[in-house]
Length: 192
Image (cartoon, rainbow, N blue to C red; front, side):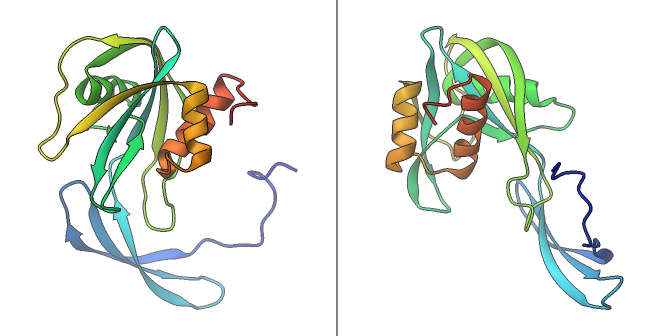
């Protein structure tokens, strides 16, 4: 069975009205009114509209993965993650990944390519996350953090990274998805 092309009896809802609810620094929240065309059912929903994101899977020449540790305000915890950020206007996911890697860690690499995409939370958000693999990463210079960023760069062998996932030390959902794509891309079935 092909899940993407299989027949479904479900019908999409129709957007009837959209108003800006809150304008925030990196996203906007909209109140959207929908109606179901067959059941005559109506409902209001809040949707976060955000630029697309990029998650960077950066390997050093020794095959260590570059991660960052940073404070996250939503969970009020220190979080171990892949370097990541918003894709700027007129920027490709690969350009954004290279920029974010340099800004957050001071590293650059080569052979950057997209290894996957996902919708971070389609129940609430309209954007995509791109997972970009960059090889042969080496330090180039100082980081260039955003105003409220403070990051610690970590290099770890892949087996230690996946062990940290299994222990629960790495629990950021997009980082876990990024590691799934990396494992799949490198055929590391025994490590995930």
